[in-house]
Image (tube, rainbow, N blue to C red; front, side):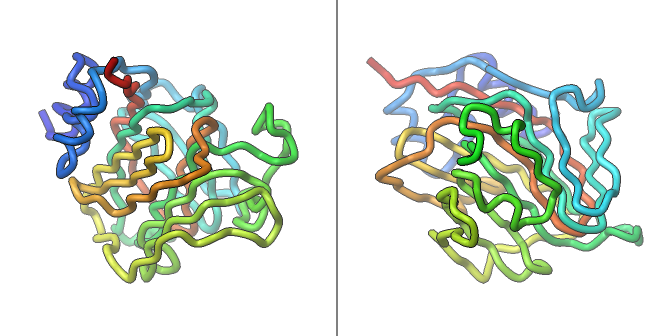
Length: 239
């Protein structure tokens, strides 16, 4: 059993945030008690839980335990169920480099707590086609890990206005490594916004006006990713 599976299993059994987020787990666990597993996909039963938006085609499949995203340009894969914090998302993603047409190691990106300013009660009531500019009207957090040809890693907070994507944090590293798993954790806990990779806290933002509900998505551009073990766990404040 992999470390990822053990950690996520522990969450389901009641180990809470401490099992998923190393480094700060002592302080985090002191604020929370164990929560339940509230959503999951083992990627063995197709895309019924997901909605895809593809700029120029490509393929997105869910079978044999893998969500496979193999696309020539922009792609967003939304989890259909809206989430409300506090919660922690976990998944493992591997950038595939094996000689395929789209095997460009770049853009392990996420939206979360996303709503669309044009249809705030229904994200899917407004059509989008996969090009990044079409997402400017979202109110959302956006992490771009190894983006722009695997040269940048950034956190943005979209505010629902065309052409406005405020940059919160910007690193020249860490970046992606071909065929190496990235065990990602996203924490949404009120004003606390965190994005972890392989036990490393990449983004840690304190938002005075936080987004606390909305949709999660995988987002990438001209790449090929294999994603496994998607889980969402509840975080509960201690009394």
